[in-house]
Image (cartoon, helix red, strand yellow):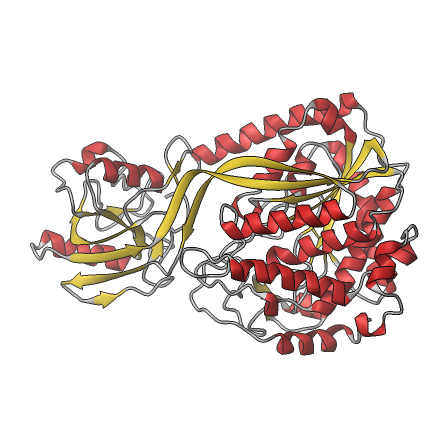
Length: 558
């Protein structure tokens, strides 16, 4: 799940999170109290819920988490940060480990490959005003970085279309047309005002004019004076733009100052230093493991995203992936009524790429065979909430609630309520969330009922959630009690490591998810979709996806 830009970097020891957990929920049964060994669990047939839940052991889960951290440590990115990011060696090594584990448990394993536009920063993007007022830009306060690569120190030259003072509503077309660069000196840094066209369109025109860098400054109306921008860019056609020159965003005051200095003949200079790598066609992978048992015409997909972003990604989402793999190992010998298909998706952090590719490359027959999806996305948050996915529930990110095919809503409550029963049985509250931002979203979009679990990440835990789950307001993980955004999904921090997880939370969440999986593995009432229904759902999904893409292409990214 994706987060928001924050400034500070930090790490926090696990002991702080363990204290918060104990205060919140009291003692949780851990491996020290287990009466059955891992070997016994793996060698017996866990064909009842009681047997399966008994075999969910903290030591097993934590050892798998350690293995994921070791992979990230052994495969750093180009900046030296531990990494399991899609498109990097650490992710491929994690894929190889998952394949080995699934095969050893008797699953039929395939690795689905697709390509995506890879981009990653390897260090903190930096910049400064060299003259006339020497100032070092603070990332996240004075400067944001768009996805772009390069280092330059050069004179800043305003381009056409800048409107100062700004009009009451956005009106600047600065940089939106090649004509705005008439007379531009190649090798300079183009100074462009935010306005009425996409940032990517401005950047493309600057590159074509020979700019060595770009600074886009906020337009200046109320609400458009501070720092904005950063991240990916698209052009007017909705295509991704990743220039090979640095493209930064600064507040209105800095842009106005540079514009005035240039017009006064002071020849202002700025330095931009964005160390990154881009590849328009990088391989990524989904790991798919099918049980040899169960009716393939009634398949339950059990998924988690396996990729990380900005580092090791141990909470988001090694934790959910370990939850999935541990359950798969413990259910490997069970002759279930329905086929279980475990999928570790890539590219979730980049826009649900793996699940999008998987669901939209199923034939009508293959789609008809999938009757349900269960998603594990973040299962070990120290300062946790207990979220259960429900397609009719509120959007975790505060946006509108997605609209799914009608046949999704009622069946999705089936597994949802199984999780609720478990949480009730151990005295824990819960709240419902929309699947927006999780891989379950695309299954719902193609008409497959789905539910799942998540324990929260990124800033900030509210007082209302503290009242439900204990703990404290502020970050869900990491520097508890603060509101600086945490480690998960935060650009330029690279601190979502093993210490960012609580093993006891991981244990009870895995048990909850195990009960959901077991329930659906033997269900004979929900998994009844016909091929005709699947085709209709697929058609509706394609139409909705096309509408979403058209909306994104015309959205004002300015």
